[in-house]
Figure 1 (spheres, rainbow, N blue to C red):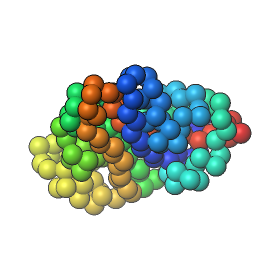
Figure 2: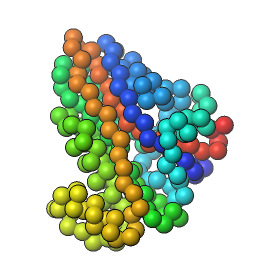
Figure 3: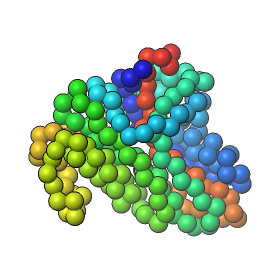
Figure 4: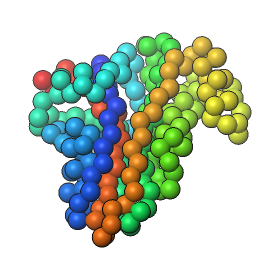
Length: 184
């Protein structure tokens, strides 16, 4: 069971109950209808990243769906909470890529998203033997990675939200959702 397609999605939910807040975040991300199974960080070989709309067309309610899920929540008013997914896709589609999840507080969308993207790209670069300065800034390493001719693309999806007032739970999710032929 190796997925041939995957898509990125994100969402936010607010509710007095923590679990209901998570459910609403999944609804916002359009993945609440599935039995989600969290998996680790590998983008399978020959797995095409498609639009959310294209990926959702192939999933059926109740299906067991694997995903890399970033989730964070708070019930502190105004606390900035973040969930991000980063992806690094190799040039050679027969090689695997990497997906990273990042959860933080106080980071804006761009900072958290780039951090997740950097994590995925760095994991892929180390497996491909690409030499780089680990202490250099992400944008510098990104150029090195892409100039190596081994990393085709990097991307990220990030969801941020400020904690709701009145002690309500605010949940953010970001996910790379896998589509297999077994979900029909």
